[in-house]
Length: 264
Image 1: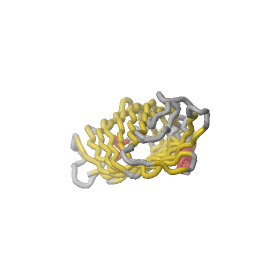
Image 2: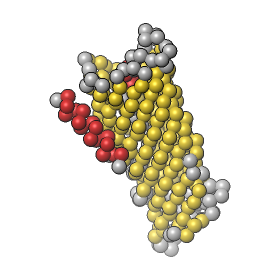
Image 3: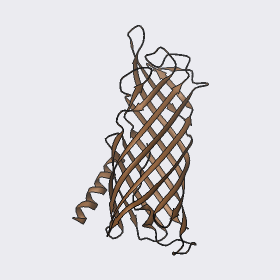
Image 4: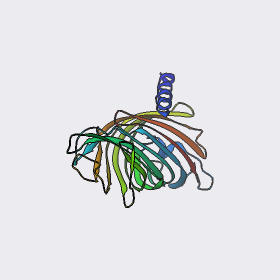
């Protein structure tokens, strides 16, 4: 049974590697020993890296029109700072840079179908969140988490039907909040987990001097098509100093995340 759980988690996470990470519910107590803070301290601090790679956020057009967004990719590289309380609760902040690539279609007033392609430069992204252990039995842990993310990005190029258009004074604003419930099971140095999340992701792109949506305007809003998603992943640690976590997200988006943390 243990082997099956571990194998399923690793295969699920690695298959996605071909929007916001949830994390392992065991995070608050995975690292027992750090570099400087005593083991019996009621609080400790971790710093780390978070890489989030969304292959398809599965968005849809909202407000100005209807229909799916053909593709929405987002790559993010960030640093993280986590404060842990009593090995039960984590509060964290994320600070990094993110880039979006997207394309979608819309029908204009002459009933012509137009395809828009857009790519932004890397720009500042931030997030805040927390997670806590609500139930523990043997090697099994149940946890909950919540997170809010935001970024304001600058398009570097945009085309309509293959022709470039002016991108000065335009921007892409993205924000997302999510809550999650997850279960993990420790198997020696491996800690696989599975969970569900509920999220709301919204993107606003504008203001272009040319129409980019069905409302004959230079603005478009996007929203995730499904708010409910599946999370599967696995952490690797000996309990001292460092841990590594790989995560895949399915159903509402296709994405993968890599997280590494050092405890002080």
